[in-house]
Length: 364
Image (cartoon, rainbow, N blue to C red; front, side, top):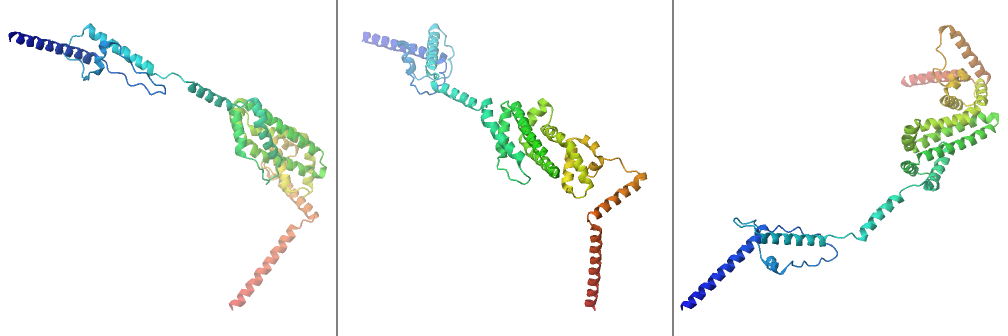
């Protein structure tokens, strides 16, 4: 009986010691094990299961631990430090295995975006073969159009071509091509004027001047982006002034000494040239080069104000004589506007008198 009692006491003591050792091991793991890293991002390749580092730690993951921090009074021994280091190494290995390796697809996407960027580059060959021919055709139509004509061109498309060429650093080439294009056109116009007979010379010069000035109203806005970011900033000039100067040099200067005598002759003969044609030419010449006023100040003063000096009282008689001479010339050419005005005034007076008499009789 006493031997059985002693054996039971030994078994109870060994069980208590086993429980105490187990509790000490669990507390060491619970207090000093670091939180696991976040799960790795999912990848297309399966990640192999992590193998346990040793047979002694097989029981550790199976234990349901409560992460409340280290327990008070638990000594930190070398065994606990070894457990922590082994767990950290296992977690780092798992993260390294879960990290996705670069795939060929990502490299292909980068190359694709680069190729798309390179496709948007406009080379000088692209400019000469694709973009400038569109601009060349539109400029041709604008330079040869008549007032009121409809031109089937897309202004949006032309402006877009100019914008892209400026952005791709082709402004200098485009400006050179534009000047060369318009210069060739004006040289052809000048040759046509030289072959014109004297009776058609003034009228054809007026048509050429009006057609060119009308074309500039469309050409300059189409190339406004080039004008703003190349001509004004780098050349310190303006596109419209440059194009007007081209007409002055290649047309007006070559014909001014043939044109001016014809204009003075037409001035002395009333209505040999229509007043609108005369006004357009005189104002156009003054716009091209104001110094040409000195060639015929009286002619220019009839269409442009403040050309002649102010009138003085001592010259009033001379002005009156000039007006009388003009009236006599008009009468000699069959212009009887004064007689017609007096006749219309008499008819109106007779009509008013008869109307008044009729109304008075009706009232009675």
